[in-house]
Image 1 (cartoon, rainbow, N blue to C red):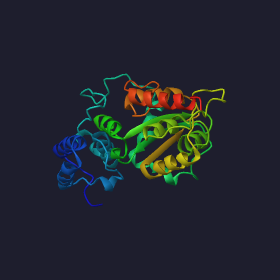
Image 2 (image 1 turned 90 degrees about the vertical axis):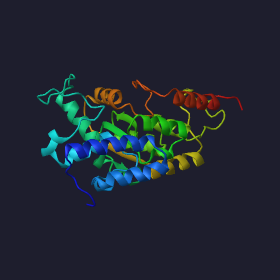
Image 3 (image 1 turned 90 degrees about the horizontal axis):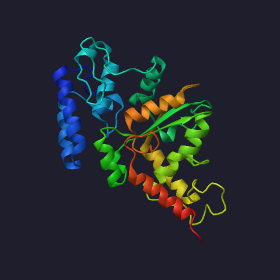
Image 4 (image 1 turned 45 degrees about the vertical axis):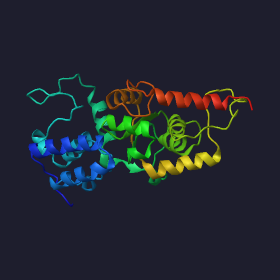
Length: 276
């Protein structure tokens, strides 16, 4: 470990402030801000965090490393307010839901998309997708993600098999994956013209084989994935997480759904239904 894992309240507050400033700064200023953060003893690499980490990510990892020091840490600006007795002032979901949310969102458990093909289970569950560096997204999407102060881009459910839904459909283009269609459209890809004309479903567009390979390569290079197995209640957990986390590329249930994403998907649908 290059830095330290125990921070005073003042140090944690200052690091949190610097992280917020860093996320809003250009690349030239970010280097100097990172140096200030490291001078306070926090090295993101010690905790498995990537360059786009947020204040919430910082607080989560140091709380995990130092459970005994919870009271010395400042509250994240988007965490529930606590009373003087340490209890949340917001109404809590059932404990199993809270536990599932915490397990799914643990930064240290996220794995590179390129390394998961042989470890994803054939079981129902909920999954989350983060991007290593928001700058790998087109400018408008990068700016929106930075403004949300996290690097989470999607949350989804697999009602039967995480391996088939999350891995196969969403990350490897084996079937109709909502996330795969969205990230492809965001990256500027479009389906072949008229490719849905003979199909019964006129909205489930897909990309050419060549473009699918390019999208999969981008996914493997840039995305991190985590999942938890859930036998029941996965719809409720997904809804709670989307409402709370507001992932960049979720549309349904998302109070901050991006209109630009909906337009890009609609454009792809139109191209796929266009007469050749």
